[in-house]
Length: 151
Image 1 (cartoon, one colour):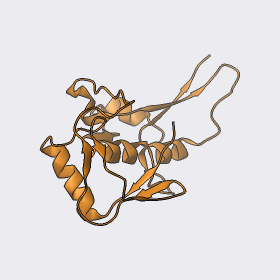
Image 2 (cartoon, helix red, strand yellow; image 1 turned 120 degrees about the horizontal axis):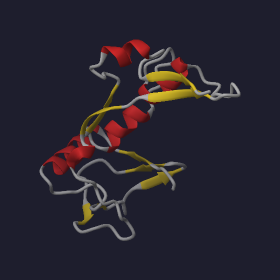
Image 3 (cartoon, helix red, strand yellow; image 1 turned 135 degrees about the horizontal axis):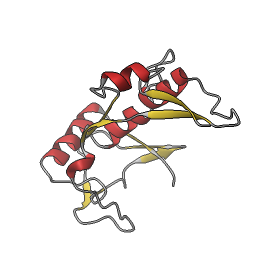
Image 4 (cartoon, one colour; image 1 turned 90 degrees about the horizontal axis):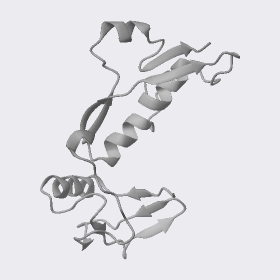
């Protein structure tokens, strides 16, 4: 698929969050009216002011059935870097993998799996590297990354 950035101001973001909270819009079902929006490269910018709803039913062509509420909340994510019996492995270091997924490394990657799941779910999905298990945490080489050799 194609990804497009929706450029909205803080007031519009707050309004969208409120509409999701009160159930007046449903992500994956409700369409926004973007007829007055401007488009440039990979961005769609809404004009300042009220966010308008195009329809309140399922958006045409969309089938984003949300699973039961188990998909929301705090989610423990563990990345496993595997070295196979031939010594083949991803060339990224555990620190780089951690940064790319969780935004925890030297580069403090601001656009990562954790940030995108949080933002795209309007704060309903929060990825964590807190496993509440000292055995797992002591085995990790970087936050959220475990290295495994398979032979």
